[in-house]
Every structure is written in structure tokens, then in C-alpha cells.
Length: 121
Image (cartoon, rainbow, N blue to C red; front, side, top):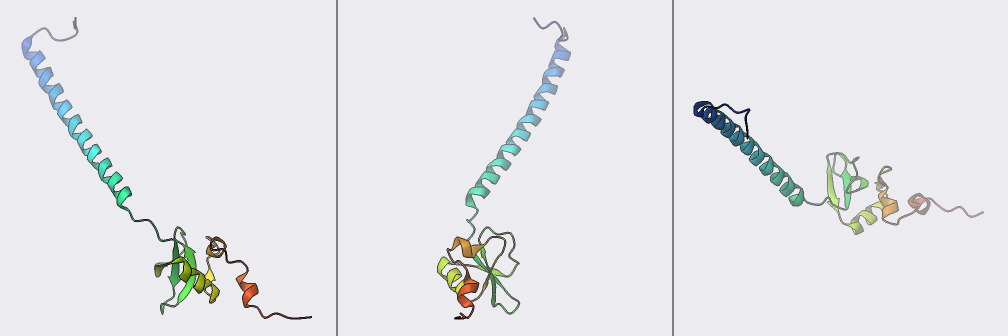
């Protein structure tokens, strides 16, 4: 049936040992990859959701800018805030990020118009 195999028992035994060693190596590699994949999957599931809103803080810790939680622009000094606090900070004059536009997502439009004095003609 398999005429390409050696005809003697000694060489066949050697081939079997050699293939068994390779199968063991392949099985170990598969096991390592499965373990790594399981750890990555667990890490993705266990990762906390980003906050909905972030306030970026200045050097003395005053609020500087409001961002959406998924924004890539805030600096290292920041803290999560609830939606109501984000709205309040924007209404009190804290600027909105021009990249993620939290003011638009919070339904706050034309804050500049609200803070400018009205001139009657």
C-alpha cells in the first residue's frame, strides 16, 4: 500500500518516533495559541466600557474641555462625568471638544449665542 516507506522495522520505528515528536510540538503550539486566544477573549469581555462623557482637567485641576468617552483627544488629566454634569459644565462655559462635539450629542446648540449679550436695535 505505502511502497515509499522503508521496508525495515528499524527505520519505520525511527520515522514513527520522529513524527510523534513533531506531533507533540504541534500539539503544544496549538495549546499555547488556544490559551492565548482564550486570554484575549476574556480580556475583551472583562474590559470596562469607556465612560459616556469625560472632562479634561487643567494643571490646577479646573475643567478645561468636555469630551465624549470615546474621543481620542483628551489629555492625561481627565475624569469621567455623568451626562448632567457634562451639560452643566458646558452651560457654565467649559469648552466642548471640536473633534467629538459633545455639545451636539448632548443636544446643546449655540452655547456662544446663549452667553453673548443681546443687542436690541
